[in-house]
Image 1 (cartoon, rainbow, N blue to C red):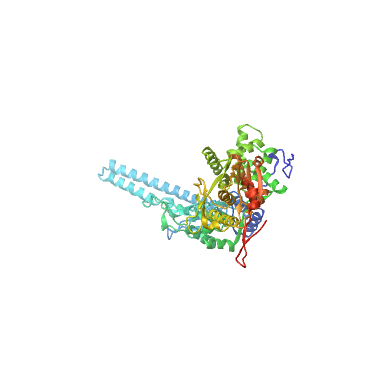
Image 2: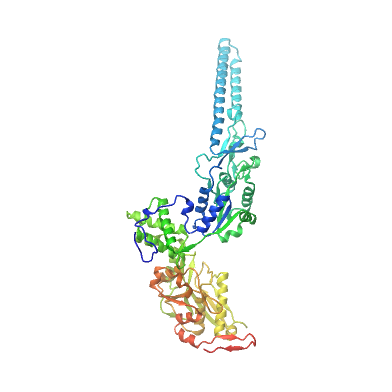
Length: 628
C-alpha cells in the first residue's frame, strides 16, 4: 500500500488487487440513492424513470435490476397457426425451456409424416413409370406416354399441396428463455417501431403452395422479449408520440398484439392474438428532454414506480475514493486490452476526477468520460509495453482524449492569438479578456470591447452585439444598472454604449461575462486602460455583488493556454479551483464590482476611492450622494 499527500486512503500497488463485486448493481459508483430505489423497484416490480447527464450509470442500474428479478417466473413465447383464420396467429406462453420441447415434438411428427408421405409418393411414382413404359413399349398404346406425363405432373401438384408444413404446421418460438440465468434485460434505445413493438415479415411468395405461413413470419418486439424482465429505453423522449402511446398501452395491459409496421412487412393483414409483455420499464433521459415525454406515460411511471435524479458529483471522501478505485479496476477488467493501473496512475486519475467535478471536495460521476481517459492511458501504456499504467500515461491521456469542444477551443485560441484578436500584453481602453466555456468542459478566452458615443436620441442605450443568447442579453442589462448607479443621471440621456463580443460566431449564452462587460464599459467611460494580461469571469448582480459561476477550471486552463498571467474570479469560486494549471496564474478573488475595477483598470484603486454611488430616497424621491 502507498500513501499520497492529497489522497484520503492508502492506495494498493495496482488495481489487480481490487475485488470487483459480482452483482452489477453493486458496481454502480456514487448513486447510492438510485441503487436503493432500484432494489425496491425490483422487489415490487415497479417502473423507474432515471434523469441525469450521460455516463452517470443509468444503463448499469437497469442491468442490475434485471439481476434482482425472480428467475422462476420466466416464460417462453410461441406462435401457433390459427386453423380458422391464417391471418390471426395464436400466441401462447409456456414455462421457460418448454418451448423447445413443444416445437421438437411437432418437428418429430412432421418428420414421421414426411417419411410416410415420401414413401407413398415414391411408390406411386414408380407405379406410374412402370405402367407408362408397359403401355408405351409393350402394348404400344399411342397416348400412353402423354397420359403418364400428365399423371406424374398431377402427382407432383398433389405432393406440393400436401407438404407437412401444410398438414402439420410447427409452432415458432418467439422468445426463448431456456438458457437465461437471469431475467431478460432488453436495451431498446433508439429502436424503430417494428423493433420495439414487433413486426410481421414480408412474404415474397404469397400463393402456389410456396407461401410462408403467417405465424412463421411473426417477429417479437423488444417489449415481448423483455417479458418478465427489464425493458431499458435511454433518451425515451426521442420516441415518437405514437410509439410512446403504444408503449403506455403495453405497460397497462401487459400484452400487445403483433402486426406489420413497416413498408417491407405484411402490413395490417396479419395481427396476432395479444402477446404477453409484462415487463418493468426503466426509462432514462435528461431534464431538457423531459418535456417531450408523453404526460400519460410519465404519469404511469409516477403512479406505479419512481422518478430518480442522478448525481453528477460525489463528495471526495475516503469511502468514495475507495469506490473510484473500484471503478478503475472494473473498467480495466471489462476492457481486457489494457494493463492495470499502478498506485501513481490511480492517484492521478482521482485528481482528474476532481478537476472534472468542477467543485471543491467533489469527484465527478460522469464516469463514461472518465472511462475514456482510463482507456486512453491504458493504450499509451500498452504501446510502451509498460506493465502498469503510470501517472505519466494518465497525464498524456488527458491531452489525447480531449473532447471535440476542447480541441475546438484550442484551435479558437490559437487562431485568435495568431490574428491578434486575443491580446495578452499591454493596456487598452475599453477592451477586456472575458472567459467562456464551450460544450460544458472547454474553456476559451473571450475578448470584449466597449465604446461610448454621444446619444442618438432622448434616451441613452446600451447595445450589445456578438450573437448573444437570452441570458447573456439580460446580463448586459444588469451591467447597465450598475454603470448608471455609479455615473449618475447624465449617462441615460447623453450616451449610447456599444458592447461587442469579438468574433463569437458560435454565440454566447450565460451571465458569467457580466463583470467583463462592466469593466469594459467603465474603462470606455473613464478612459482608464485595462491590463491585457488579465482575464475576468464572474456574474454580476444589479447591486454590484460578484456571484459565482460554473466551469471555473476549464476557464483557468484556457487562460494559461492563451498566455494570461492574472485572472479575476468570484471569491465564492475559490473553493472550486482544483486544476493544477492554476499555479501558473495569479488568482484574484473579488466580491464586489469595486474590487474588479481595482484589479483590472490601471489606476482603478484610486478611481474607486473617488466614486460616490448615487442612491434614491424612496420616500422623498430626492437623490442623496453618499459620502465615503
